Amino acid sequence: MTIQMTVSVIIPTHNRCRLLLCLLDALGAQTYPAEGIEVIVVADGCVDDTVSLVREYTAPYWLKLHEQPARGVSVARNQGAGLAHGELLLFLDDDVIPTPACIAAHVAAHVGQRDRAVIGYYPARLEPDAGYFGVALQGWWERAFQQMEEPGHIWSYRDVMSGNLSLRAGLFQAVGGFHPAFRRHNDQEFGVRLLAAGARLHFSATPWPTITMAPIWRAQYASSGWRASPMSCWPASIRRSRRRCRLPLARRFSAFWMRH
Image (cartoon, rainbow, N blue to C red; front, side):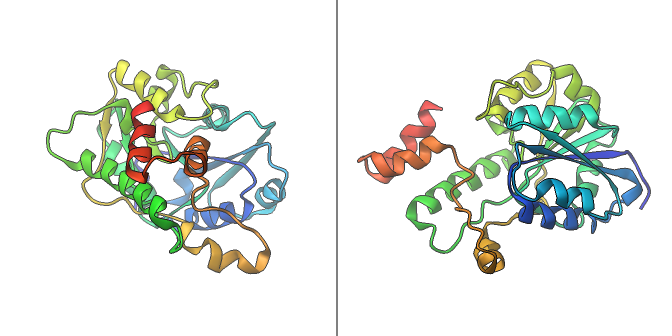
């Protein structure tokens, strides 16, 4: 495979070194040529082994580490983009594991396109004991992607999901990056400015080759003593509402998203 454009993969992370290791390994197994891949890990206030892991990691691609105090994911993504040399920026969350064709698929979607932002699919797969509330959230997540596939879909800022998102470096700079004041819903705010700048959102009808780590967290890391909740990726206000709100589940779930 030839290098059609250089790609900078930007990974903001906070105290998830074991997940990060799996992600770095997966990036080393990409079908896209390693010489065309740059990976930038931004350690946002990490106090675990993230920094030493990245420093000691031997990768087939160019690997950079940037450390910063805990300033949030928006600042972390912007810092990574500022260090990037690739023509294409690919933002990946630290809890998704790309299968081998992921980077090649993103690149193919940008060939001949200068103002496109590509939203890559990644499923929200929960552990078996996530409960009915978790299943409801998973259903909302899947419906959001299904709507993007529908003919005549009217694109909205709400469609922008930054966990598997790519765009040209020039477009990112023109839009001004992620707003540093937004620690939550930063991708939707970014989407508002993307659309205002004339960017075109794109989603492939073919499921994008990325999976989340949630289904194997318990099996893979039980012996290490590390724990993570499959619900931890959702806003804290959702998790609080599960404990405090007495509304029936369907009304509670709908009420939250109507307010946001």
